[in-house]
Image 1 (cartoon, protein in one colour):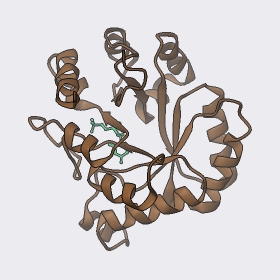
Image 2 (cartoon, protein in one colour; image 1 turned 30 degrees about the horizontal axis):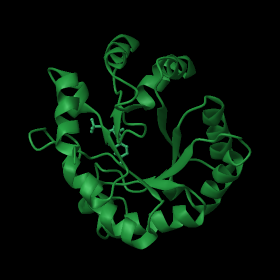
Image 3 (tube, protein in one colour; image 1 turned 90 degrees about the horizontal axis):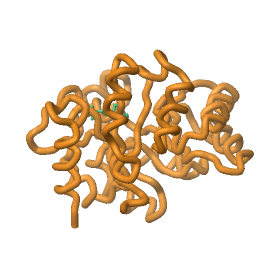
Image 4 (cartoon, helix red, strand yellow; image 1 turned 90 degrees about the vertical axis):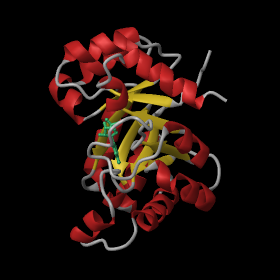
Length: 232
Ligand SMILES: O=c1ccn([C@@H]2O[C@H](COP(=O)(O)O)[C@@H](O)[C@H]2O)c(=O)[nH]1
């Protein structure tokens, strides 16, 4: 029995039906579930509660990015939902992250609060186009340091940067990595990817995996294959 499953399944579906159909087949001992902008915008807090009733810990992936007061209040609202993890954009700045951290400290059992660094769909050219020239890894390490200084418990990054961030910030700082693709899976819009076993070996704590499972002809078989790849 795995009490701290490494896999977080991204439930990116357009409606409750298919999302619940998959959740019903999954086992909270094998994975956690991520609710993102699409499902939360459609279904709201009651859907999160539904997943929690099934026994799942939920990562509410809304990537808050706003002024400190607004983000802190949004994080408090997420904590009220009893979610396991919530995130903010580290590029929102130190004061914003500190405000969110301070509000979380008011909760007896607060979610993990983590900072999104550089989206895994971006490469160096994309960063240059938005006025941030340089390698994604450099910016990830810089934003990870800022998140750590602000008191956050970890970051979202590509597994490609996991080893560098681990070396810079040491153990105990959570590295949550989307951009995970089994070798036979299509990258789609993800530009900085690694396989599940590479991600774990690089030091990722949690692997966020969506379409390689949710869009597979047999999602349970896809999950089992990933678990087998990760087995020691
Ligand atoms: O940098 C980021 C931050 C978040 N995500 C989210 O993770 C999943 C990945 O889904 P796949 O289908 O495995 O690509 C998705 O919900 C994103 O919103 C990310 O990909 N990259």
